Image (cartoon, rainbow, N blue to C red; front, side):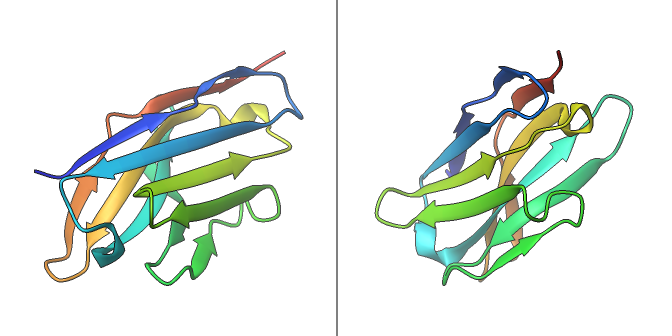
Length: 117
């Protein structure tokens, strides 16, 4: 059973930084594309960033230049470094793993990020 567990959320002032981490268990990590999504209250869940097993990245326009996604295949982890945070970045952030061979999605439980003065 694949499990994804996020950590690193919290409260930060505008302009601040946070680093989110997600660790996967129960699967072969390199067989998954990994990503981060977020969902603000009353809104749909939106893609933030993804990273392929080979390290190719994609970012939503709203976070380009501010957020960086990375993965450590030896530790089965994916990270999201978030800089220059804005109040509109406030959301629950979810780790996602897409198993390539089956196209099945797996989700973490989410971690709250709040950007407020």
